[in-house]
Structures are given as C-alpha cells and as structure tokens.
Length: 244
Image (cartoon, rainbow, N blue to C red; front, side):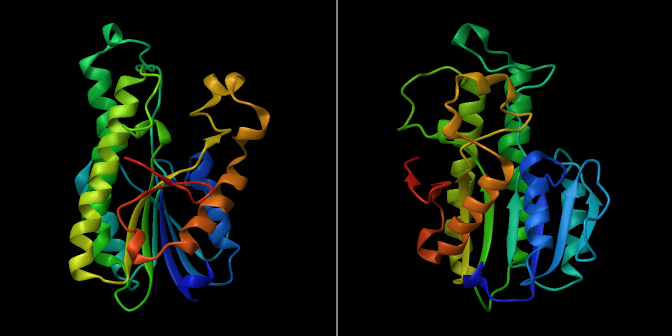
C-alpha cells in the first residue's frame, strides 16, 4: 500500500473469517502498518505485537460504537476493512426461486450483509485521516450488481449486497464533503475458498477459485490504486469497476 504512506493504523471487521484473517496477517507483516485493530465475535490470539484483537457484535450498534471509541484513542485510521458477510447457515440457504423466500431469512441477510456494514461506516468514517489518503472498503459481491444479474435466484443475498452497494455510494457522497482525501468503496473478492463458498465450489473452475491469501493480495493492490475519484464504486479483485 505504497500510496498510503507509513505508520498506518488499520481496522479489520470479521477478523476471524477466512478473508478477514488473511487481511490481519498481511497487515501484521507489512512494515508500513503501525497498528492493526482486529474485530470479531470470537477474537483470536494476536499474531504479532502490532495486532490488537477485540470482540464486537455486528448486530449490536452499541458494540460498533464502543469499537469506534476504543480505536479513536490511538489516533486516526488509514484503512478500514469490513470483511463480514453471510450467504447461508443452518437457518438460511440461497433461494433458487421467489417461492423459496422467507421473511426471517431475508431479514437476517440484510442485517448482516447491509445494515451491519452501514453502521460500521456510520461510526468509523469520521475516524479516517483527513491529512492523507484513507480508505473504507466493504466486501460486497458481483451478484449484488443489478445490471450484471442475468441468472436470477439467490434473491436475499443479491438484494442485501445491492443494498450494501447503495449504502457505500451514499456514504461516499457524504464523506466527500468533509474528507477530500478519503475513499469509500465496495470490493468483490472473487470466489474465495472459504466456508462461505464451500457448498458451491464444485461448480467453479479451478482458475477462478482463489485462496484467501491470493484474494487479499489482489484487493490490497486495488486499494493501493484507488483515488478519491473512485469513491462510491464497486471494484472487482482485478481492479475492474462493476456496474451497480
């Protein structure tokens, strides 16, 4: 992340997940990073002295607000990564058709994929450094693109990611008025070999199924290339802008 300078302070939400863990490790090994604030439901042992692990609850705004208060004590942030997300669990599965829609499953996906990240932005965008480039990046998905949707299905996941994209766009517009050096974007990591995608990996060509390390390296390259003019966009792992 040469474009952001040195002595960076970063925050990672979803730090115990497959992608989140790799972000934390990458930052811990980067000499330009001074401090890493790793947030997850079940904090893991710190991987280096630069990492501070903290518990947080994505579904509880007071927990997010507390996280912001904690981080603010150590100065401005230069990068915030929101690597949280849900595709399916024991209570939810991607719908193949509209007949499969469940209000409770829809609500759960929207709370985790859209509302939670939007509230993180609410409390953390104000902590971004105003003196140099800083970035807020939330992991979205290509299937959240309305224009790109040619297959249908996966109603709740698609719609919740589309909602996230709109939150990112709105936050970016407001952010531009108070911090001209900041960037707020959504990132599509590609199909990554994590527990989230495991049930669907058999249909993915080997060359399009990325390891978490590879996906994180690609996204960091994208982040390094971003400028304030890119704020509000959705970008794929290869730097291509995806239409909303």
